[in-house]
Image 1 (cartoon, helix red, strand yellow):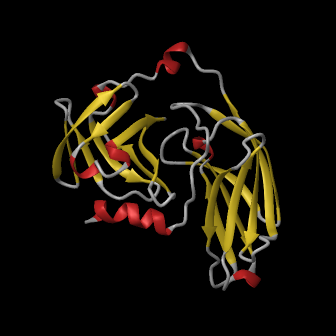
Image 2 (cartoon, rainbow, N blue to C red; image 1 turned 30 degrees about the vertical axis):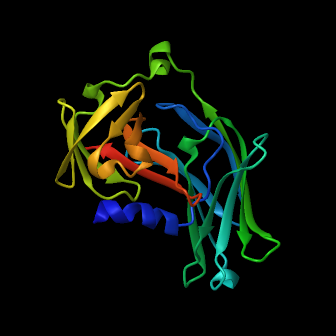
Length: 227
């Protein structure tokens, strides 16, 4: 039941179409020149190394009934790389996370807009993402079953327990199925097949499903290794 509901839950959060370009798997990177206006910004590391996000929070009591919209643009991209709705708590506070680890290097601008038709900015900020140099071995990116075998648990809002075996089988929340490896992708049958047709990648030590559904909303589910 949980696995069936997760795609719907992601749609309801209002995540919009994905970036036109994405960061390569396993990149180490830095966030520089982070500046914010009318909000407080900071970087945060996820449960696994490399899952760096930018956390935004502020107080906008006037918009408790309307809600807000967050838009992120990269210089030269020609279109927003990220867009989502942001709720405002009863006390006037709002919070949002920017998944900077998903995006390529560049200079970015984000704006928090009100819900009016003209979308007036009520907070904004800028940052630069810079990738560290990678070795030829890290750029190769081919997966092996040894990279996947073990126990994984949902992180970043994903629920469930994933057990992967070396014989090409796995169990998700107790339901058994098979998987296979194709290049830098692992393809799951069974209960995980509805997520991006079962296609996932290992990024910075995290199994990640990342795709756009037919309604045009972005889905993002992740699993971190337990053992």
